[in-house]
Image (cartoon, rainbow, N blue to C red; front, side, top):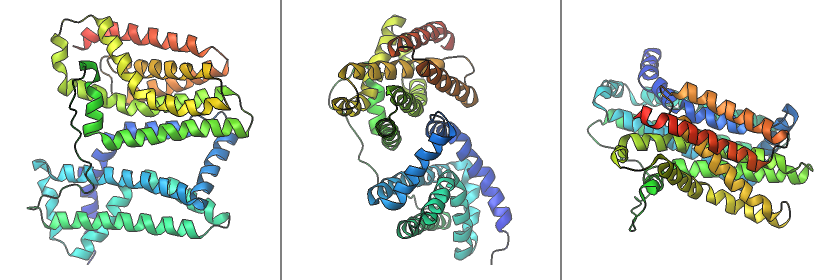
Length: 372
C-alpha cells in the first residue's frame, strides 16, 4: 500500500519543497535573525526564549497567539502549494492522485511536515520545556492542534490531487481592500500591502510588536537601560525588511511607469521616507503607551526616526546591482551587528539615524539610474 513513497516524495521535494524554501529563505532567515540575533549574550537569549516557551505552555492567551501565528505559516504553505499546482508546468504532479487515498494522505502529511519544519523545531523545544516543567495540558493541546492542522491540510492536498479539474480556492479569504480616496504615488505600496499582502503585513506587525513589548518587559524586570529597547527596535526594523523586499518587487512589476516621470531623486527619496513613516507609525504609538512610566516622551521621536532611517537604508541597498537573497542577508547581518555595536557604545540615536539616512540617500542616488 505504501510502495513508491520514497520516489514520490523525492518528486515532491524537487518540484515543491525546494522551490518553497528557495522562495521563502529570506523571510525565514529574517525571522530567525530577529528572534535569536538581538540578545546580548547566550544567558539572556536562553532566559527570553525559556520565558516565551513557558508562557505558551501556561498562558491560554500566549498559546492562542502562538497557534494563530503557526496557522498563518500553515496557510502560507497551503497557498504556495495551490499556486504551484495551478501552473501548467506542474500538471505532472497530479499523477500522485492516482494512488490509494490512505497512501496519498500519508505521503502528503509527511510532505506538509517538511514544509512545517521551521515551526516544528521551535514547538519541539516548547513542548519539551513545558512537559519538563510539569505542565501537561497545554502541551498536549498544542500537539493535538498542530497534528490536526497538518493532517487537515494533507487531506485537502489529497483531494486536490485526485480532482485536478476542480479549482480549489483559498479558505478564510480576507475581502479585497479597495481604497476610495486618491493617494500620492509614493503611498501606493500601502494599498498594495493592505490589499494583496494582508497576511504578511499582519505577521510582520505581530513580530514587531512582540519584540518591542519584550524589550520593555526585560528592561523593566531586569533593570536594563533604554539601550536594550532600542536593540529590540532594530529587530522590529529587520522584521519589516520582508515588506521592504516586497516593496521592491511591487515597484519592478507595477510601478515601472515612475521611471519616466520627471521627478528629482531627492523628491523620490522623500516620498519613500513618508511611506516608511506611515509603515512604522503603529510601532511608535505602541511605544508611546510606555512613555508614562518607563521612558521619557523625548525618547519616542528617536524610535520613529530610527525606524524610518533603518527602513530607508534597507530599501536603498536593494537597488545595488546584482542584489540577491544571499547578498541581502549579509547586509541584514551587517545592519544588525553595526547598530547593536553603535547602541551599546552609547552613540546618540539621532547620530545613528542621520548616518543611516545619509548612507541610504547616497546609495539611492548612486544606484537608482544605474539600476534603471
